[in-house]
Image (cartoon, rainbow, N blue to C red):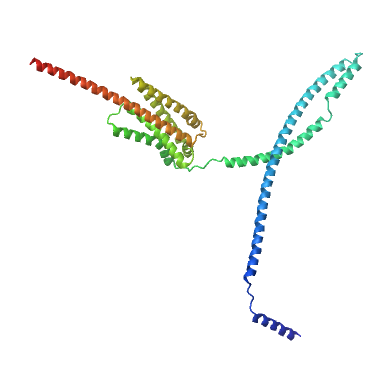
Length: 366
């Protein structure tokens, strides 16, 4: 039996080996592909459905949080009201105790029974035996609601802290931070002096006024460029890079600003032309208002070691404003210089005419 079963199994294996493997047709492959595609579509639809359900649950949770917060506020208001009522009742009870003490002294009074009935009516009206139980129930409700509201508030606070987190600023070495902080003022100042020295060998008060206006305009242009390249406020960037250097930088800028305002005042006092005087007065008032704005936005928060609240647009606006003032001041000084040249040429013409006249008289006498 065992030998026969082995022979049968060997024959079956031989038949399986002799038979060729069956290759599926294209129709079968397409049907299998269509089935797989249907399964994929079903999976996609289930995923979309799951996403919609999660969004719906999020909305429901937000609604529940808002309702819990409203309930918490209502329960807090009720608790305040109950506390006020309890205080009033305590005051009333204190008054009643005083009155009962007086009653003990008035035992021999014939109208005592009638008076006691009136006081009993008073106590029934103002003393509620269920008040303590109501306060305890309200306290329990407030504790549970307060726990849920604190969880919701903590979650919202964490999200807000993540959104309001400051942009990290790259920390420089002390030398690099000092070069960056002081270079913002010293580079425009050096370029302005170099340009004026190249244009004129002799520097007068007009040139110093022009240098100050050029430094202020260049400084605000530098701030605007730094804000555009770093994509954040330039002053905040410099303050976070090195706060001590930034404070000293603001002190230097304050001294330079006061010196420049003094130069403008001297220029106003030495100007005789009314038109130039009026233009210089307007320019002085504009720079004075700009200094007040800078003091409120930058200087005071810096001295208090607070964060500066300015923007890129404010630096762009200040750069355009100071550039316009620079152009106006240059036009005023140019007209003033032309007037001096005109006066000098007229004096020279008068002297030449006088000398020519004297020479003609001498020729006639000879």
